[in-house]
Image 1 (cartoon, helix red, strand yellow):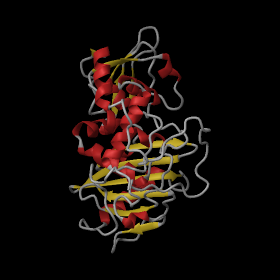
Image 2 (tube, helix red, strand yellow):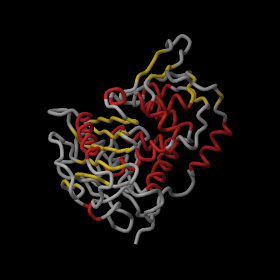
Image 3 (cartoon, helix red, strand yellow):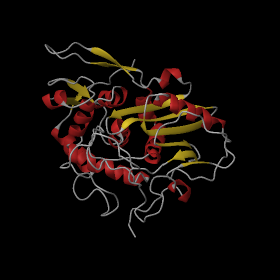
Image 4 (tube, helix red, strand yellow):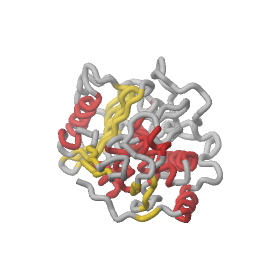
Length: 348
């Protein structure tokens, strides 16, 4: 069971420092480099009726290579037959080591991400927040929409525990508290969009730190794979992804302490799983991103707008991972996951 580090109070000075590090002042993106969200528009309640918008680099090119501009299914030359039963509208399998994309369908389609967007929240905030700092729960945390880890007003929650609650239980209240620690929601969203731009995830537009739907918010199978590739390469965020259980603290007269468990069942059911993140809203349907390792080879898989029948989305991911591990280790020719800073952020 994960043990919480020694607690320290989150001071006003620490908040200011975090805010400055996140770069709240000034625009988060080069103008015109990416669409924006529209919080004033009606909240999406259903998937796109057809294909969603397709993302691209600021210069209009396809990130990762022209072979990934497809809206259909594509695989590397000489690949085995793909498994049956994959109903996700967009998906991707890639070698996290070489970066080579092995197969994909609509990899740059800009789908609603649901809680898979929390992987970007983790990637953005883990390097800049002191993991031992304590954030006090608020009534706003208690009232947040959707899935919650159970924060209560007056509770004292270390940032490290909030990261684990964010991933393990998909806590929208944890996302809210982490955003508050990082200088507020708008500061956090600016930082998330800057992170997405830095790693080449130009299909991603963060409109909430939790992934709750908002008009214009998006990610893509390609971008989710980019984010997960970064997370499993970092020892701390990999540890967060692999946490099975953690202990939530008691709050006097409000709640007893209790254990939380990871919702990523692949951690125990699929050997070699490095981590994963589920998501679901009515607009996004089921989304999922995960990484696994076998014989020293790491793969990443992502699915967007999937259903649970006839094949559950996690089983679809397992089938695609098994298929990916059956491909040649030197397979190439379809496209690749770019490295951070590789794609120019300047529109042409």
